[in-house]
Every structure is written in structure tokens, then in C-alpha cells.
Image (cartoon, rainbow, N blue to C red; front, side, top):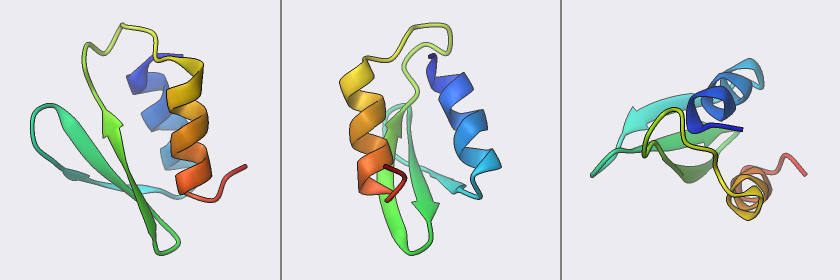
Length: 60
């Protein structure tokens, strides 16, 4: 899954986004937040990164 695909998935879950430093976005969902790297929109994200962001946002 690319960062752009993951961002779209998070939006469907109700997440909102704010710009962060250096090609990253803050993701907010139900009072929780995590950082989403947007390094190369076509580059595949590592599975562990996706799982960690989901866990931080309470989506496990």
C-alpha cells in the first residue's frame, strides 16, 4: 500500500490531516494522532509502519 492509498483509506475511516515537517502529515482520529510519512506517493510503505499507525489511532 502506498502512502497516498493509505491516506485515502484513513479518510474513509474519518481521519483528518494537518501538515507536519518534511513531507509528513499529522493524522487525527477520535482524539488520537499519529504521523504519516508521505515520501514518494508511489513508494510502498512497510507493513510494520502501516500497522503501527493503525495501532496508534486505535484501528487494530
